[in-house]
Amino acid sequence: MDLGNAIRTLRKKKELRLSDVNIGKTLQTLSRIESGKIILNQNTLNQIIDTLDLEPVEFYNFASKLDYPHNFVLQFRRASGSPSDKLLRDFLLENYFKSDYQYSDISKNLMYYYSIKSHFKDEWDLKELTRNEVQHLVNHLSTRKYYGYFDYCLLCNVVIYFPDNESKLIFTKMYPIEQENMRDSETKKYAFTAVLNVISKRIYDGHYEEAMYYLEQSKNIDAQKSDYYFKLSIRYLENLCLFLTTHDSEYYGKLLNYISVLRDLGDDATANLLKEEIEELAFGDPNNIKDSLIKDR
Image (cartoon, rainbow, N blue to C red):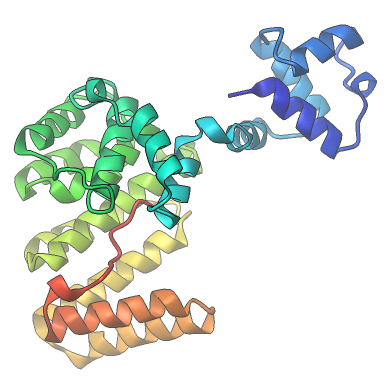
């Protein structure tokens, strides 16, 4: 992460001169900081962030996104939109799909490798996850002492491959999220999406009892109600599961109401996707569904 470049970019956006960054440093020192020629200590960096009138989280988020070539998530999402882009594919495979990441003991490396493998296996002709790979991931996640961003991002992308017993084992260790009120929004986003993915996969497989188990457990997640996408998606999946198991028109009506709200918001693409999803799950073949709620978010 190029902190100096972020400082310089934000300073110029705020139309501040180097001399306006009044932290007791010479202009030459400040210039060398922005050029990345001086390694910043935390105290000096905090002073600069304060002088720029920014929150630390805001600064680090900006710096991360500014350092685009080294931001895996941004490159990954760009590739999701253009999977046929050979340059982007080669960049991701060369830098993040490394053979020594396959059975790594580091969550970041595993997240890189298996996010790519699970998401692009069809477009980039990558092999399906093997039983040995799945077992390694289960062993890795089940023995962690504290779960962070990379753990939840990894889980989000691979939980659909876990057998139910192993999935429940991981779930009971990773949820409720420890110190949830102290977690950043990105970590919680992937933690919540992993829950949506495992429920969606169980519904697609016709394992409705298992889906209801996770739906019940989800009530203990996001106690602060900070993510309405998560809450709305849980309610959608709950109504979907109840409709598929009871065929009660009341639940079908609730599903259609949800789709109607999406259309009112102008999200016709998702509304059409969910309408197709409901019809295929209830009246057709789930294998015919082109897409689903299962995602990397």
